Image 1: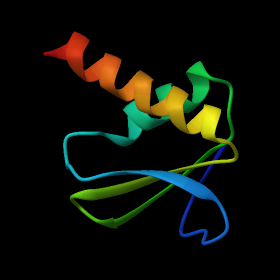
Image 2 (image 1 turned 180 degrees about the vertical axis):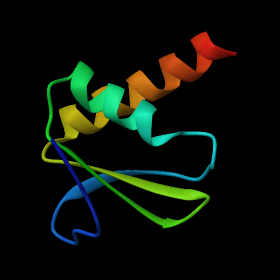
Image 3 (image 1 turned 30 degrees about the vertical axis):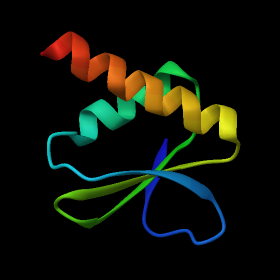
Image 4 (image 1 turned 120 degrees about the horizontal axis):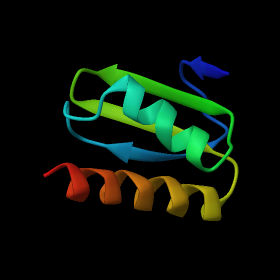
Length: 71
């Protein structure tokens, strides 16, 4: 399950690239078993919402790991 839209009250990881696809975002949230919530304010900006700093760090590490392995 996921939601897409803006949430001012939650923490988020903000990414400035158009290289991260929605399917990759879903994989990250599924990998750490989180409800997925993200927002694209522009084609080059992505906000991934989380409840805790640990979730924030996990998503960041998964994205970095995925991009390194894909290169």
